[in-house]
Image 1: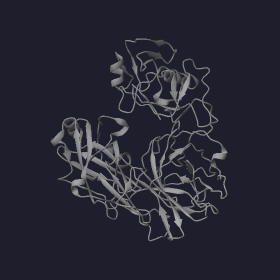
Image 2 (image 1 turned 60 degrees about the vertical axis):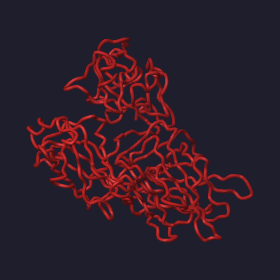
Image 3 (image 1 turned 45 degrees about the vertical axis):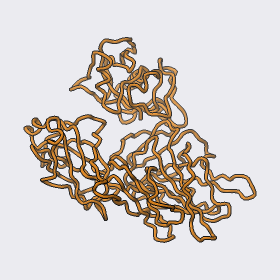
Image 4 (image 1 turned 180 degrees about the vertical axis):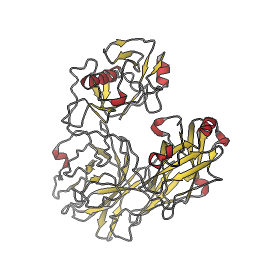
Length: 519
């Protein structure tokens, strides 16, 4: 059977750079044990355990994974497939018709290297004791290529409408029955491997004169990329695919290709390039991080060369810079599941590339917070930017903080219109944005002007969120580091809050601007 697994009903997400963990909902120890349903023949429940995505954490691994980490977040949808063994036909029969969604589950492994997923409604091993197999993939929008795959051992998944922002992962395949419970427990883990390469793009101008002539970078495109990708299992015949080493290839013609637009870093609408310094390799040759994109790797049947187009403030449209006539990016040695930096040096009429062939750290949202039961007390601050107000086993005590009534859960609000009717709530994790001004706080003379200063994905805070910031700064003036607030700030409803005194001014005529976002 094929299942779609929805990560939902969670208050927030967690990513740790070295040992990523994900906690879901509220639950009890009983949620994690193998259970049985009544009847003449009890059917043992399948409660799969998945290790955080890593290329080098194989089946049975119990050590902390060190491979690249997928950017797990609320709303991710995994596809899962289950097949039961048919003794009569001597094959595994896969049924694609049944869907199920993921419910809350607690993390309980001793080695802190994975997270549990609990299928709902629960699925069961076959009652007759025969073996069942399961495997998964991300994103679940992948579809079967062609007709029935009920007994096809080398199954193929097709992803369409690829645009470079998706991450593609495939899991190994696990097998077991109700006696040996081979798909359950901590010794048999689903391991999701990345099947794409991450390019991390940095931009700089050749010199100050070129920087002045070009202006800021407004758009970066990777040209002529496949919009359809096909994964074929690495399994040979009826052998269990425990490695998930099958190939992801371009399925389509040149007419199926399109240009990928790179999402600019931190939701920015433009990037101010640095100045190229050929002697400063340690600091990315003076270049500024501009964003990253996922591409079919250069290994095996992948692409060999990559072309870029960069539009700037003063070079737009057909006049945009390209590297088409100067230097293509050769990625034949770039591997799936690895990340590579590429420095784009903008010249007057061309782009000069400085690729870094040594893999670097896979970029994810760097949220170093502990969503287990904290001994710090709530709310608390992590990494001088994240205010954590709730874990998955309880919530903060705001009895001493006037103006805060509830904690928002089950959704992330990242626009000004989303949160204006919930001014007394704060999210489980609130990120306080950096300064927007040049050397000081940005200001605005009216609410619309204040809203306009928040980049995509960010918004103005509510009254409660500013009161929360005031509370944590009162406890520790250095808690937010260089993101600390000082003065009166616009709220999304048109008031201002003085973070020093707590005074709220309605219908304000001026105020500082600081943006926030839910995590």
